[in-house]
Length: 422
Image (tube, rainbow, N blue to C red; front, side, top):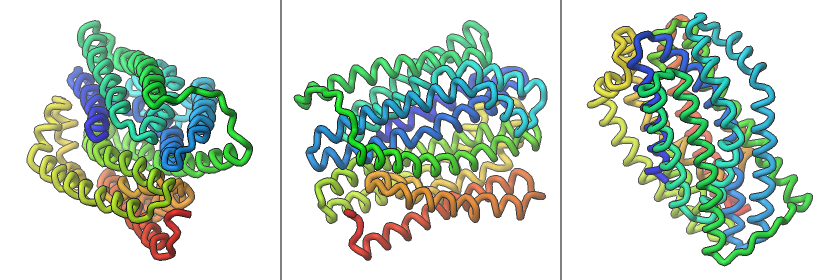
């Protein structure tokens, strides 16, 4: 899972590098705004993968095949409904993006071009999230690895072909991602069918009972709210960065790739702990549950320290590989120190998100996110607004730290009350 997740930001690095070497900053700023908006919408759907993983992992621990199928089919139905809603509302969403970001005409033209194409990958992207969650819940880590690696290889190859070979620019990057998402869906369906056959399961179209469906909808609702608040913070970075000028917007797009590298590597560990904690809860084994939490903290700490050293030593070189626009490079170097310290600060929030997904305690995740966004992100931003982009990066750092602190506090309280298995 770590290897497959690292391949996701590598795709973002290629997108940024390909567009970042075009002649003007508005190309990079445009794809930053367009892809950032798509990421906001698609990441809102992370509740599909999270709830599926937690439910399937606990069903796996219980050896409850019927519950597994009920959760899978209900999640796929919710995924399609969410995706079709996004596609139908895309004109309204584009208008809202323009009103919030107030970009230049050139930047908005590129952002609109990317968004209008990429939004049609929503059905495939949403279903892929559910199928990834299903495989993770059944402890099949190779499946997600194959899917994510395949998706990004296809995307990178088509990126280079469409953008550099055919000179399609931002539209080429968007079409590359759309084709990659649908190719991944075909592979995901094949791997899911092969997994069920290997386990000797006979697929059954079981509709979830009323209690199960209400539980899943409540779980999805809380994780959706949590994801919405998270993406509000990231989109604020993009939209307010756009108001600070195209160089700042483009520089933040470059630097956010550093944060994505950290988040996807940490989420690789978190995905594993989701499945293991969920299985332990389903099997009613609290000692095994706490062991997996301790192991994830160990590995997370080691990776966080490694990232700090890599960014400190090679950060300027990575920026130089991503863009050769002098004004963007100079701006990004000013804010690079924030990214050097972020891995250690953010490590806990990623890992304990995974713990609470495995426990299917979405309410705690939701409350932690809302509290951290209000007092860790938006309060520092508005108190220090005169400091411009430094205020944004300080707020992001405080936000990550407070998320980790609140989740750890809640976990320790549950442990003290012997409530981890409830």
